[in-house]
Length: 444
Ligand code: ATP
Ligand code: MG
Image (cartoon, rainbow, N blue to C red; front, side):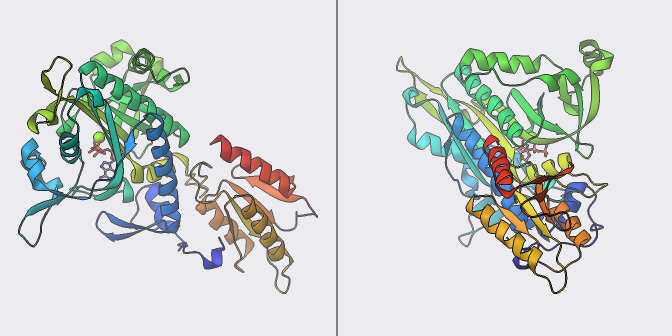
């Protein structure tokens, strides 16, 4: 991409309406534009990052055997009346009437709709488990939308649903998602801690929130620091192994303020391991048994000829919120430097030529490098404008490609000034740079 032709509307200064760094940066580099309270358009830079996050989320869902579907954003009120949530959901639900005067709504979540899809086709235990997900816009009429896309009204979510024959099988499904979430967030270069959570309006009895640490987070968290040393390396997609993995995490105290109990915290966690801080909820999983299947009549034939209601769980990831959460975790606000993890960076590398009047040689060189990178499937952004060098660097530091090639005084022949953002620059040949980036991309 050439900066001169791009749609990346950069602001000179931080917008005053933004209170947290992700919101500031996203407006500053034109990743999003507010269209009304809590509703945003996604501009090229923001959209690109969100799509990359979406893809990682998708790959990790597919890996545990969840099947992708796409349900609509607009739902009929009928199914919500069946489950009893039409009244319960309250003012957060955006209710709409169509021209026939039928009550419709913009889906805030999809338990009812997916249960309706399930019950119309699946009749036997032999077809279980069924694991389904979609990635779709949701609408919740939040009372106080704030922090940009972190708490907005229209947002993009991956939501998955599991249907099983028994509690035991349902917990196996639950644990698959537990593992899948830890792997997903790790690929996004985030450390997310699973925390025992309240189940809220979704209901049920087992639930974990996945929280990343951030001072600007809305959840107060209380945890045992040792939980950060855990990993999922030896977990296999088998019942016993997954159960052990979840137990390993649950061994350490980790809750949000909703579930906090001072006495228990102080008893279970020694003083030097206590951590009280704030975090952002990026995912949430629930097991709620037959809450919806019973009220909506979703049952299957059992081996002996009897019927029973299926046991369900639901599993959400805030795909659009993750864009902001990653900025909260990675943006160095003081120095105004963003470094996206390569797996989701809007561009792999930026090319910054120092262009002198009446001399196109730096730009020509930059252009050739750009084309060569492109041939090797490396997505570069090149600043071909005639702005001064320091504002070019400033701009690229905000856009946040993790690597830079600077073409200026230091460039001698084949050796290019190459820099990983935040590190010292080094002299490398173009083919060495291509090799390094290709390796990084494969790894992620
Ligand atoms: P919160 O506690 O933050 O209000 P929630 O518990 O209501 O979220 P869930 O129903 O668990 O949300 O939704 C799954 C995920 O969707 C959340 O973990 C979060 O990442 C994301 N999400 C929920 N509400 C919003 C919102 N208003 N704006 C952006 N993302 C959201
Ligand atoms: Mg939640």
